[in-house]
Amino acid sequence: MAKILVTGGCGFIGSHTIVDLLENGFEVISVDDNSRSTSIALEGIEKITGIKVKNYPVDLKGFEATRNLFVENPDITGIIHFAAYKAVGESVENPLLYFENNMFSLINLLKCVEEFNVPYFVFSSSCTVYGNPEVIPVTEKTPTKPAESPYGATKQMGERMIEDFSKYRNTNSILLRYFNPVGAHPTTHLGELPLGKPMNLVPVITQTAIGKLPIMKVYGFDYDTRDGSCVRDYIHVCDIAHAHTLALQFLIDQKNSSKCEVFNLGSGNGSTVLEAIKTFESISGVALNYELAPRRGGDVVAIYADNQYAVERLNWHVQYNLEDMMRTAWEWELKLAGK
Ligand code: WQD
Image 1 (cartoon, rainbow, N blue to C red):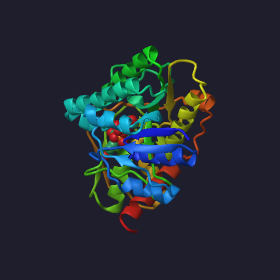
Image 2 (image 1 turned 180 degrees about the horizontal axis):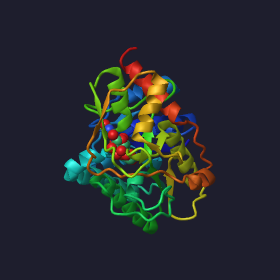
Image 3 (image 1 turned 120 degrees about the horizontal axis):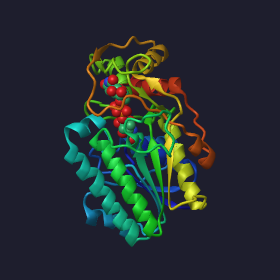
């Protein structure tokens, strides 16, 4: 049974991916310093799979502590690297926090991949590497542009580091460019757990609807889009999770045609912020209290994916639509509120 190290395993996408990996026969260990997550996710994973996953509470910015993970687990076959800060708005306000955290952790990991000859590496990248694309939908061949935020810049630098590393070492890698992962596990045992005030749209919507937040803002209503608000490609977190399992298996089966392949993970549909709100309202029956507000620094106007390359090469099929995303997110918020 191949042992996989999931970094950020207590996080939103990491925890859902661990469930999918376990359900597909992989052995999994997690490393997560819980600076932006809690070990509640491990309980959710156990409730869904019956498996108690070991988490190493290690800050990957510390090389020795990171290296000890590999000393203790010399049989790690693959790594899925999620651990990073990921809020566009926050990165604009505090760039050095993002450069230090996201880049130092990746460099330490790659040093261990080199020393311990880990053959497979899957990287959590982002559609933010495309900046504000000229043409949408974007394919993997769409030229990347200077990122609109320091967060996006850390993903671009991370991709380049992994591409160069893979070219000159024995490791085969895949870069997965997520669009907007949202929703929650249909069992309601796992979901998004933003610590403190949420920054991403869907947890802001559900926390406003349940009354944790009095009102929410729609950042920008004068963009050149069909209703003036930004367009994003929302994709269910379980669809994203399964794509990681498929990507890992793709590498293990040596189906990759280069040392570092790139895949867009989006639904292929673009929705505006106001459309996302309307979908939530129709699913939940709750009229959302929101106000139209000025644009947010670092925001891309419109982006959504052409996901055909992942569909064909990874045999990946998106299972959840926007209604499912809003429904599962709302059911998770209700569960958190004990309702
Ligand atoms: C979406 C839209 C906001 C909050 C995310 C992740 C990033 C990456 C890409 C994976 C924007 C608007 C938001 C609010 C709003 N994913 N919004 N009011 O910025 O697209 O980035 O997806 O790697 O990690 O953060 O997501 O949810 O913050 O914003 O109007 O209170 O919702 O302006 O147009 P974003 P988001």
